[in-house]
Length: 253
Image (cartoon, rainbow, N blue to C red; front, side, top):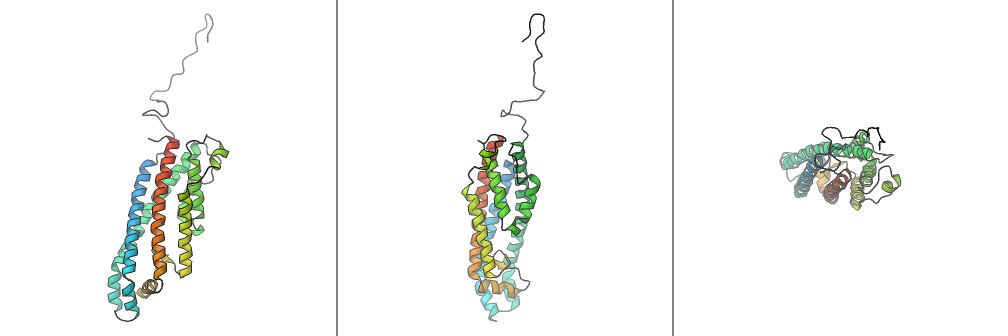
């Protein structure tokens, strides 16, 4: 307030183009993730469908595998029946690669947004999200679980910025825990079956390797395939719910 003869202080007018935060057209420092999450969900659903079809194909090949191992059919005849399996396996690998790229981008942006939300100290910074999704399998997905847990807790829309006690001690969605447990079960099944498996079938280089996997380890193939489907469904639900929680925190429209 100015006294007699003292001019009033200049008004602090906002810069051109500024709109109050939360209003239509407002500038936001946060990266958008809703579009990426929609594409990621589509890719993961396609992965689930292909995985389920691949499992059915493998189960249908069990009889042919027995016939081949018993000498009832030739290797050429068995290879012809394996064509759909290998085509689906190739398609599954391509889709998984696309999903991996989207997962990295999705987590990268979430981690960056958490830094801007004042979630400090943040363990899984944007650069580390790449390492987690690329090498998480080497740690039995433990680091994947820890990162998703931090994503979930840090995305709490009720947590105040820089209030470490509030966001770090928050509950974790049970689906993230379930996804981690299902992944561990798949690893145990692979170890018990003695397989380095892809889609439940050995990564051997010959038709006999595949035939033995289908014939002798059919139960493990079934458990591994069902586990992959369940894991995929859980991941889709996690992506959907975590995106909704995170966008509520960043007020993404």
